[in-house]
Image 1 (cartoon, rainbow, N blue to C red):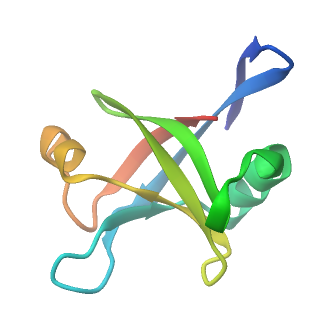
Image 2: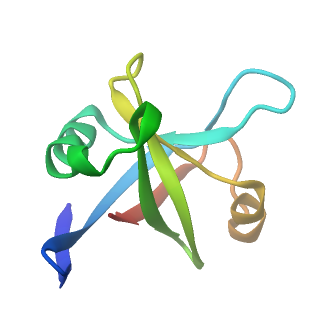
Length: 108
């Protein structure tokens, strides 16, 4: 789902909503991520490619449950999709664990 929120100068702020399974990168202290669908990733890349920074990094504001935070998504060519890291403070506040299906929205 895509919602156009408002205009900021000449750029539109878009909101994207999705659901994804929380997974942990291999390793003892691995990060936790949500993988955006390939379809949603293609749409975001189409709309925001010019805003990407190094290594496919794109700044976003994420909303999940009661949590709202500034972060970034990264495009991973192996997945052909963007990855959203979910920090420990958010996982604790929301009471979520690896394998849970989470609903999120991103503002770009």
